[in-house]
Structures are given as structure tokens and as C-alpha cells.
Image (cartoon, rainbow, N blue to C red; front, side, top):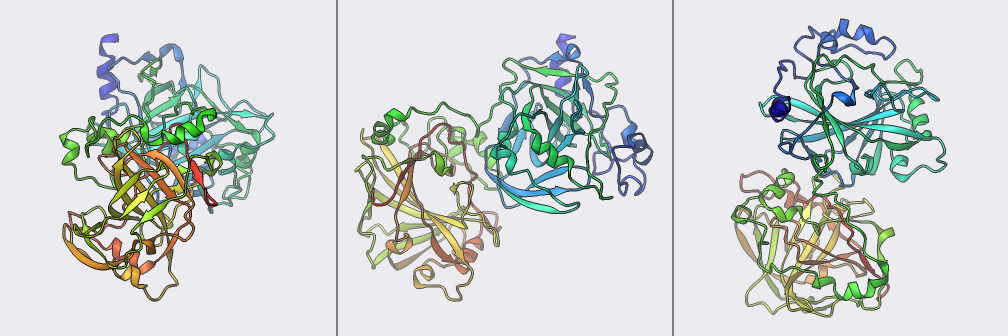
Amino acid sequence: MQGIIALLVAILFCYNTAGACSYAAGDKGKTCKDYHFGYSNQDDWKNKCPDCGHNLQSPINILSSLAANTDESVAPLKMCGWCDVRSGTLKNNGHTLKFTPSQYGSDAYLSSRNHNSFKFLQFHFHWGPKNTKVGSEHTVDGGAYNGEMHFVFSGTDECGSQKYTVVGVFLKTDRSAKNVPVKWQKLNCQVAYNSEEQVQDVKLYDYLPENKDYYLYAGSLTTPPCTEAVQWIVMKNPIVVPEIFFDTLRSLKKEDGKPLTRNHRGTQPLNGRDLYSCYKGCNVVAVSLCLNLQSIMEGVTVLLVALLLSYDTTVASPYAARNSGICKNYYFSYIKQWEWIIKCPDCGGQLQSPINIETHHIISNVESMTPLTMELWNDTYGIFHLKNNGHTLVVTPYKYQPLTYLNSPNHKRFKLLQFHFHWGEKYSRFGSEHTVDGRSYNGEIHFVFSGNDNRGVKKHVVLAVFLNSDRTLTQVSLKWRRLQHQVPYNKEIFIIGLNLDDYLPENKDYYLYAGSLTSPPCTENVQWIVLKHPINVPEAFLDTLRSLKTEDSQSLKKNYRWTQALNGRNIWSCYGGC
């Protein structure tokens, strides 16, 4: 009945799942846990793992005529971090090829139909034999696809029980493709059984169809232990995969050394479960970090550079108009970055920073761009104070210190307010906020300036410098020793003799784009100047930063924001004395 659809969706994932742990409660002893299953004897699964014979099993044959259309009370999906460039490992576990993200990268989240956030764990593949029309686990009206990709997320439902959300994407082979797209090249690895390969620059959003209509139902894991604690979101539209990638999957070896030519489970009975269909509006996936805006015409490049700081930012206050008092008093965390947009809506805007700088998309040396010029950067008697604000180490000029200026590429003069640091965990290659072609550095310095743009509107300019850790240094140079202080939370100390020019690379080629502050309130009134070349920093200095304490007395091991979607913005490049 139409009148109870909203209620059914709301309680869809409060069904009884007493066995929502790693192995279902019904699976006695270690029989299921130690069971090395195969796809040729699927009828045996329920003998070793009783949950595999229960009533809410997956996959299913989706009968489109039975799918109830969801109504306005059902919120759209929200994806956070899906456009972040991330590294990870590909593992051949003998059953599939599985991608698991690096623990040092940013997390990805899916806000599901019940409004809870589920954290990305891994994705993997299912496929069939060569020259067949089978391979997907789910079917639609009896029709199969060549394969299926599963994005697996973990979280809790409205009832507080552990659940999984799995996004299923159908794969359709393209046998005519002679070239393998880059996104598939990254995963096209021949991984030995029980071995792993490191992969980089993987973006989850690249593996979703453009049209995100989907089916929704309650089901299970599709392999033993077959735990019935899964919200299934099955995309209606497939994505195209080159046949050569399927060939690589089929050539993977199982434990017995034989090729894994197929790995899809047969469809299971629906057993009276409700099936929902989302389309025409409810399917509009709200991807706060992945909206693709139409790119700006190349013919107005010079004009755009001149207007770079003149985009509409009528809000000149420290907190943007969309942000409420909740944002102003919000003590944010780098662990829960997905929460920023809830407290500070500007953090979900279209001009957010940092970004991944893709060098093949930049616009080089434009006539109106000029080299950076700096005033009083080499004052060897500079007086500053250091403060640990619980998020970073902030270095602020003493109030009687002569002012330091940056003359920006739009010929305006901006005054230095402060500079601060971003870094990652020890032995991690992550830490910088910006990345270049998916590559991270160990840290990043931000010199923050304030001034007015061409229209007289207050703006910020941030000069970013990449930090490259040098673990071979046994002694810390004087310029870093001056900053190497263990400052207690919310305390500050004074230092003297700081020469800002020491913290810049000799080569000052740079990238230029319009963006935002990289922490709440995420105000979008920043001209970013990202220097291309890093400076070396001793590991001992980064260790001092990591030992700083937060408000709750925890060590501040990392403090970088995930990269944000470019959303059609242009990036300019200045090099060779432009």
C-alpha cells in the first residue's frame, strides 16, 4: 500500500539481525569461519554456514514491476570523499580482486536512506566466463550483466545495530575497446594468490554510472558467512568495462592454482521482501564533493585571470552567511571531516579547498600573470608568537613587528596575518593538503594574507609551500629549531629571529586558483598560490608537530583536509619567470 511506503523504508533496516557480527550467530563453532568456499559447490555453503540458507539472502533477481517507487520522505544518497584521490592495496584472496584504501588516506562515506553515515571499507568484483552473458550477481527481470562491482560500507542503523551498505554497479563489457582507460589501468594488475599490489590515484566516483537511479532492498553478504545485515543499493545503469580488464580478472589464480574464471553467486528467493525503486528526483545523489560543473570557455582565459579575485563573495566576515552560530562555536575534528558540512554548510560549497592539481588540465603562463613579489620577508629580526590552537601550530607576527606583504598576481598588496602547518602521521607519505597529480607530500605550510581585491572586497590570499621530510638529517637546522617547541594546548610562546624567506623554495613557480579556507568555516574567499617546489624539513620537526596536544589531550598526529572537487574551476600555472 502506498500509504505505508515511507514507514517501511524507515524500518527497513531494523529487522532482527542478532548475527550481525563477523560471522552470524547461527553459524556454530569454527566450521563457517574456516570454510574455504568455492563457486562450483554453492549448494554446500548452507551446510557449513547456516545463514546462507536463510530467508533474506542476496543476490536476487530484481523484478522491476514489483519495485515500489519511493516518495519524498526518502532522502537522497549523500557521498562524501568519493572524489578524493586515494591509494590502497589490491589483493587476490582467491575469491575476488579486492581494493582496500590506505589507512593514511582520507575516508569516504555514504549517507544511506536511513540518514546514517556508513564508512567505506573496500570494493571488489564479480564476473563470469569469457564469451558469456553472465557474471553479475544481481539480475534485472532475469537479465544478467558481464560483471558487478560492490562498494562495501560499514556503520550502524537507526536501531544502533551494526550493518553494511553495499552499492552494486553492473559492469558491461566493451570488446571493441583497444585502449584501456586510465581508471581501469590502475586496477589492471595480475596479483598472485594471497598477495597484494600497491595502487595509487583511485577515485571511487569514477566507477559510478552517470545516471544514478537505483533499486533498494534488505539482504545479505553474497559470500559465506552470508550475514543478513546488508542494505543493498543496486544502480540501474551499468558502466562500460574493457574486455581486457575482465581477462585480467579471469586469469587470477585461486588457492589451488587454477584460474578464477567465474565468481558470482546464484540469485536467491525474494521471500516476500520489499523492493524499492528510486528515480526522477529521489535518485539525485547529493555528492557534496563531486558535483561536476560545466568547464569555463578557454577563450576568456586572460579575462578570467584578471577577475580571479572578483568572483561574488559578498560575505566578507570570518563566517559565511550560510554558516550559523553552530559553526562559529564548532570545535571541528580531522577524524570526522564528513561532519563539517553539517555544522558549517559552506564546507559543502562549490569552491572548496584543498584540491588535487592535475597538471594536464592547467592553463600555463597567461600574459596578465606576474611573478610574486614580497616585502620584508627576509627580516632577520622578526618577532612572532607560536600558539597551539588544538588544530595546528600557528605563527603570528608580533603586533609591533614591521608588516610583511605579498604582492599577488592581480597586482594587489596583501598583509601577512599568520602562517601554520599541516602534516600527516609518522612514516606516512601523506600530510599535505593539496596534491599534485594524486601525489601527496609530508606536510604543507600556509602563509595567510588579507587584503582587498580589484573591487575593494575583502579577500584572503594563501601561499602554500609543500614540505618534504628528510629522515637522513641528524641535526635540526636553526630555522626549524626556532619553531620546534612543544607548546601546550591553547598556550603561546614568543620567538625572535625568524626569517620568513627561509621557508620558501628557491624556485617560486606556482599554481593559482580560487578556493576556500581548508578548515571550518570553509569560507570561499581565498586566492590560492601553491608553490610547485617543496622545501625539505627534518623528520624531528614533524615529530614535534605530531606531539602537540588537542583540546582532549590527544596527540595531533595528522591535520590535513581531504581534497575537494574542482567543480569546473580553472587552475593557472606560472613558471620560468612569468
